[in-house]
Image (cartoon, rainbow, N blue to C red; front, side):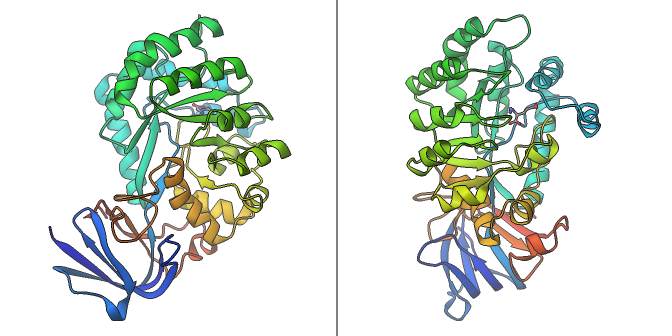
Length: 386
Ligand code: NIG
């Protein structure tokens, strides 16, 4: 296995409790893993050398919430929002129709395009969801097509109740035949617990069935208003509850006393003209926070984690360190990939060699120069991809 020594690192964010953030650092990658991290003066030799000439280095972004298996475009819906029309879950069915009608090759090409776009901007670990099929065949197809193209696939048959169904019959389908068909392709299940989608009882049924099928759990909760999503996520031991835009004090307490990550999706809140989540209160209460893009054609059509980080710093009251950590280690924690051999979101020996070199001397530039493409180089599982 060839090794690469990366030198000239002015600021290295490791997210490792012992290593911390290092000045004048070096890194050795060996095959798909990090082999060594430390001060440049002590760097061992390696087969190849890359000098990043005084730039900052971070773990690659971990985007723990996307919806990339889709066809079609909803820019007209977005434009209508700009003119004052509210975002509604019902818009999801527009993408469902387009996705059902698209051939496999078109869905795969679109998914590959978005993954490439994300990786080009420093994302090295991605989750994506089904949820634009909503029949047994279409949900299974989405899960099958996504397998191998992203790091984690989540079953979101409980996205909205499709036209022609009542909520109870559709929930039975999701918890029975659909779950049986999709489960072999996915590691996770999710439910959109919100007015206009699934209420507490239906969401509970989905989470219970998915846990019995051996899947990890996540919840879309508290996106468009206060509701039971966070409480249910915590009660069911979900790895994350995503959105968290409208939280009560008891939601914050429940999260603070749990292992459930609060995944914030600020690009979505901006695009849907929702208030921005109160990251400061969550962090001060001790909640683990992740930042993700929520890339999808309806509520958040961006793959840019740097945009999410800049927004988190400029608008959500997070420090640069907190925002970078949430977009790397936080995402890894939400995907339960933060520990052991091959961990992501962290740079320490044994971690996955996912490295993001910024075209800047420090991570502060992510917020200081918002909107400027600052990715200089990317390694994903030890392979240089940019
Ligand atoms: O996370 N909230 C539900 N699902 C997506 C929206 C999908 C869409 O509008 O197409 C989200 O924002």
